[in-house]
Length: 162
Image 1 (tube, one colour):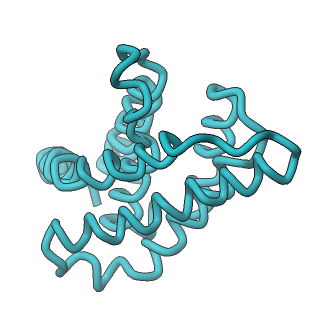
Image 2 (cartoon, rainbow, N blue to C red):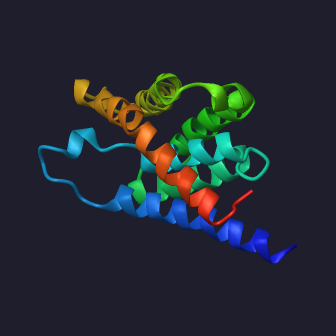
């Protein structure tokens, strides 16, 4: 392994740690229903930019860790995140040439799929369905995509992550 490869891994891991920190940050009561899926956004970016480095296995592990810190059913986020990353990994060559707003629509779709999987898992274990506020993070996650893309792309270019 070359030194550049080690630095590359630290950049990827650092952005994921930052996403976990943002996930744990409390929001004001009025903004709590809009809390975006930071970890999903970061994983989707890296799966699109570097599918040979960040794939379904990394997404599964990050999803399990997300399950632990959110105190959700073990595997709920892992399944949703890994399926979303799988879709983006399979489409990464096409997605790279799309404008950001079209990429945001795909992010909207895979985030909706992630939320739907979470809802199905919750309902299958007997938890009550959640109100309409459950779907708001889908919109905020997709709306943040263009900015997250630009920030992570610039970080990737500055530190020569490939």
